[in-house]
Length: 387
Ligand SMILES: [Fe+2]
Image (cartoon, rainbow, N blue to C red):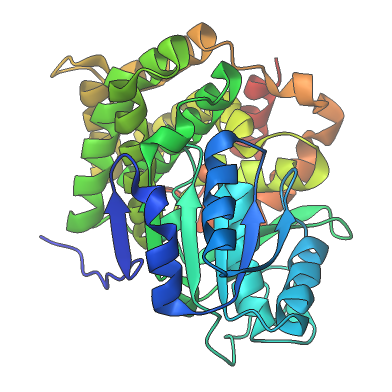
């Protein structure tokens, strides 16, 4: 039985070494004045800016440090609007891409962004089509180059929420693994664990379907064989290409099958603590798997989701008959080898457990979880990830 699906993604996806150098031609096909959002400084990113500038296409730009707030997005949007930009380019990690994506949407939809935001706002559809948006990922983790949402932090509500619309799909995604070659090991590790989470959660999600299953399986194989090598060997091309591809596949999967409780908690914690999204997902993932597997074993022991956790385990451990728990063990051991810090390192304590579990229950990602968890189960999950 094939579950129905409705598939749409970025208008064009270019994946190859050097793809970022197509930026002038691609920008010119979509506009004349580019607003550029960049992440951390890097030589490849400077080259992209120089190319746009010398082609006379660079209009204005902002650098994004840390994960974007609603204010970052609205400020960028009014800048882009006031300076007459007609295309938005983002080069960087998920933070830069999400900010660029939100700017492209809000520049064409002025007013209070709460009108369009999920959870804390009215969640109304965008009125006008966003400015054309080009995404160039410089980390291998978020897959945001092919998703239709931008995650923004609301400091007032202390939560991260999405601005989401099918109109927000990037027009072009230039995925150039070379941009990730100089990433430091801890960023490679945490962003890579985000990708793995975004491959496991859609695979067991209530919205999993034939297309997303294919992305998830291929992505998990790549993370299994290449994440540790990418962390250890840095600029070595093979593992970096595998991880850039796994990240892309994770974006294709999550934007159609949704996520689960790990991302629900990552949104809740990320709104209250200054911690990188990937590091939070990594610290939560093995515990999220264990709590889901136990809940499914109790309440849905013959359902598809538990079998899927068995298949996750088989892919990750390369043992055909590995039980579901073996997948969680594999992930936990990987976190240890990659030196992923526990949640306490980011300041989360047992005093925050009740509030965070309440927020995670409300998070949009949690809707994809394969089974409805009780607040008690969610608290157990979070306590296990603290230390
Ligand atoms: Fe994520």
